[in-house]
Image (cartoon, rainbow, N blue to C red; front, side):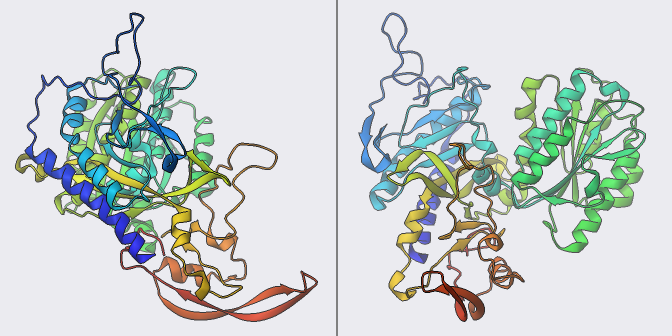
Length: 518
């Protein structure tokens, strides 16, 4: 298993080196014209039979390694989100220099034929995928996929973080502004992963925790918690006067108290302020809680077209190592929210921390075998700019990754060493199961729809003998070694039950770090 981890990590590392070298040699050209293979438009023709722009002929052939999907194992192609212009200069330049990854994609596949999808998710929004495959929009002609919202991208691009989201619900936020504010909060939640902790506070003359049961603390940003908070967002309504000073004091106190518990990120903390204006800079509050160290970054989102209070919000963000942006319409939300990821990634970029990240197991709906849909995990690594003029600013170029079927992990386990009742399993740094014999119920009973939390099954839910979480906590804390635990085992075809001491051994691959499996 250790050798397999190493091979996958090395494949990703070669992609990182190639991408950073290609960008280093590239000089941005605002007038660059480049015809690339757009994954949605390839092989499409107009009514006269001519290929569409960006839709040149792209040879596709069924390949049994990719479930007989029609792919091109010589080239990658590029998907651009529907809400982005596919000939934007930033997109075209990024696609141009990332073409050099094609050679590395092919070379990686030659070295390790077990590789599945390889890809580069750009910080500009485009997604380069190998082997090349045609993407089909939904019934509305839309492809909602944005690589920057995927867990593998978020985990690789930023460090774990603690976030307090402050939402202005004063009377001036009525109507469209409140709708945009709620969508902004929802988009921020999309960018949080299982390594992050958060809470949401609405404010006017008083503070209103979106979830009243969670006053004064932060919760893990797993799928269940995020969906729960989204449901409560609909209950917000605008009235009264916005007292931002009260909200800022509360946010700083929460982050400080939570930091002392040692549960969260410990170092990376942020306050997200969503409002239509601020009448003051509140420098006394920042001087009390955040200066001179500025350990908490302030990100300000100005809702609406008016810019009367923009200067105050800009100052607050700049004085606290954050970022200011203005959101005028619902269409502006996602792209503007993404900006904060670039800021939070700067320390990693400046320090050139190329951490390898492994995600929890998830289902790849495009690849299915005789037993049904395939469970996958992704290994990913960030890509940084090495150009002299941008290196000091910490520019994240994107994230590269490759998918690893969980069954490939199982193949590396020497079953003959485990014994007749033995089995092996792996979990992530959050205690979620990566692979386990009991990780089976993927569908809701009587339905074809996947269970929403199928990828967030905790080890304690299947290893029920581990009542005190001794095994789970040891693995999460990256401890290695052997110990035994009393378990009950059925015999005589389940007619009798007996207690026995089961030995356990925890193994941590050398390729592992705090965000990889054990």
